[in-house]
Image (cartoon, rainbow, N blue to C red; front, top):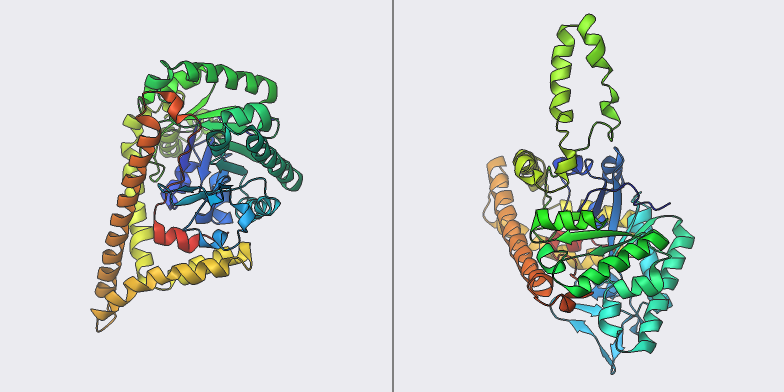
Length: 445
């Protein structure tokens, strides 16, 4: 049985969670997250109503900012061409050699520490498409890399059982090698205006449908344009769709709501019958509230991202307000300590000796801002502490916005703007490099 059976909607989000986001995630059948930002307890909260969770890992690239992993790589873990490592300047990352047993071991450790140990249901493997992109013209190397990926997948299955495994792009690799070992494949840039008029895309839809019929491999699609049309095209093709317009850095709240028959709690419809005779007052209160949530039985349409218009406004208010109080202001007081406590503790528990490299390097960024705030304060009054926090948050937000815009621009150039869809074939969009300081602080490979 495919762990993705029954999944009708999903969302990809690489940012940090808030109380409002964790709650809204429970409305989805599936969410794909950056596991480094989550504790085991938070993952359990997301899964409380049956939501499945996949954790991100990069299989065919390693980025230079990831000093924890870079320090563990051996020369044979990098793929070299003419004696030189293959470098992607847009992501500042290097192509890896998945045929290297040592590198496979590092990835398996990552799955153990960040996915299995946190109770996450499976892995989302980004950058698999690099195999087709980089090695299609060299049959010998192509086979070597595909065999290496298959060996890695077999080991993951042997160690971790029936965890869900989804690869990003790599359609030819799926068809020839990985279909028996994965549960799904993601097709980014599934935009109706391109797909409908492109012969390669039309042929690929048929191929993916055939692979699903033979090996039960679900296709997850993502559009960046024409939300309604792209959603319909995906649904007609038997694919699971999500419309992404902000490079995975913002949680799109309220797009779906679980229907009464999906959620366990609403079965308490019994009160509707009894109230009439027994308790006239209480039902008045109880019934009014519950229908408010349940009556949103527009879930069927909700997945069509049209609900964005209807529901987006409500969650927007919730998500914006709560983070403001919970995450921004309060942590401000403890900002100096937080990097030490939050970052060091979490990874330390999961990744044992590995965290040391990561924590030692990154925290340097945080203290830089702390002295500035101290210099301007004589007494640690609450108002001054708040000012310090606001200043740091504003600086951090500007940095994040800048990075998100930069990524979105690169993503669009890589996938969406091309008239010839062949150019986007298997071309991967690297993971968003947002919230740099926080991200590096948290990352323990």
